[in-house]
Amino acid sequence: MRTLTFVIGCGRLGASIANYASQQGQSVVVIDSEKTSFTRLDDSFSGYTIVCDATDLDELRDAGISNAKEVIITTGNDNVNLFLAHVSATILGIPYVYVRFDDPEKGFLIQGLNVKPIYPFQLSWDRFNLLKSGAESK
Amino acid sequence: MKIVIAGGNQQAEFIISMFKGKENELIVINPSQEVADTLVKRTRVKVYKGLPWRKYVLEETNAYGADVFIALCESDTDNYGACMMAKKVFSVKKTICLVTNPKNVDLYKKLGVDSVISSTYLLAQSIRGESSVESLIKTLSLDNDRVNVVEAVVLSSYEICGKPIKDIHFPRYASIAAIYRNYQIIIPNGLIVLEPKDTLLMVTAPENIKRLLAYVQTERDLTSAPKVFEAAVQVVKQRRAVKEENHEETKADHKAKTSAKKELKAVRRSTKTATKSVAKTAKKK
Image (cartoon, rainbow over all chains, first blue to last red; front, side, top):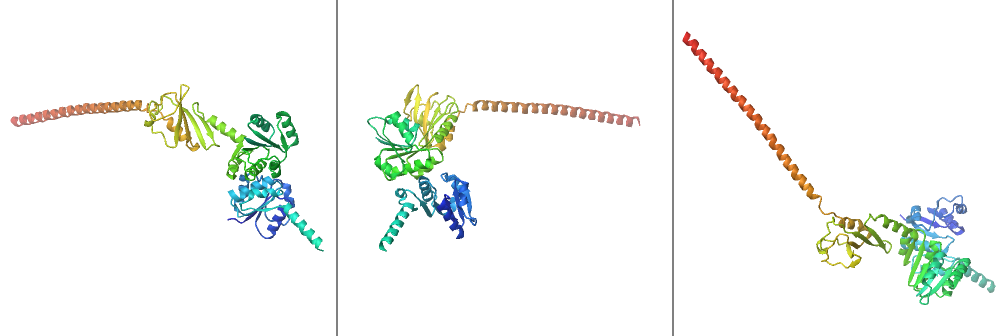
């Protein structure tokens, strides 16, 4: 059964997503290569935390990624994120894959795949334009 | 050929020196300024400093439509990212990716990298190739162990030796690619007779190597001849034993018969004497 919410990379964004999903009552697994990253999680976080190398597919499988309904990929390395997005969408066939790319041009490489990208640059750019247009209209 | 060499230190230097020349257009990209400087110093080739998985770097170096893209960075995923960018955005014809984790070889290929090289993987393969050499057999695996060329020497004791190929019922899962005899290559056909010390070069899938070798090395049934002889000897011995027993039996019978006759005679005598004595006593009376 695919029921898990899988968060790879427990940075600021990953930890926030994991905390929120846990509060919503979903079963959450958080993965990071460093144990200290898990301090970002709330005390009330009720999911699993696993220290492993996410670039090793066997370790991900051991962590239970095959049972994931959604995978959120937020590690600090764009190439790792790209690789994980490709693996999740093609080899593991996970229905919902979200990935963060600092480099918006990585978007060319996930075209045609069932992957939803998040670009912090794009979000900042949109926000800036919104703020600017709001300020100018006053 | 247009060749892009991304990342790498000594490997990059070696590959540059291999392909340097007028016929090849080399594009060398390296993320580290120090390595880029030493590469320039040693190979006298232009080196771009930049991250090879970034689109703008490949754009600046004009990597569009390159024939080969070789990613030699330290991190497997960086190489993967660079190869994907080269393949999908810059339509490079062939991407080659160096990895340290041998498990990534099959995975990256599945994900679309044309060729994945892992030194550990190659090392393991060649170790296995060497170890399966039971004095006579060598194996060579191609395309990451999907095709194997197996080399085996024909010995005079083998079943297949001395027969034409059409008569040996060579298995369908393999084929004899060539026969190496007296330093000459013979292209096999059905009429060629396999001789002792011929080296067979056979092509097969890796899962069939054991079966194939078992087939080739089937010994001719020399062992059956002594066995037949032994069996014959056994039969003769058994027969002899039976005869002797019979003989003894007959002896015993004979003894028994003679003793019975003697007894019979004795009884007759005794009866005779008894009747005589009875008659005597009757006469006396």
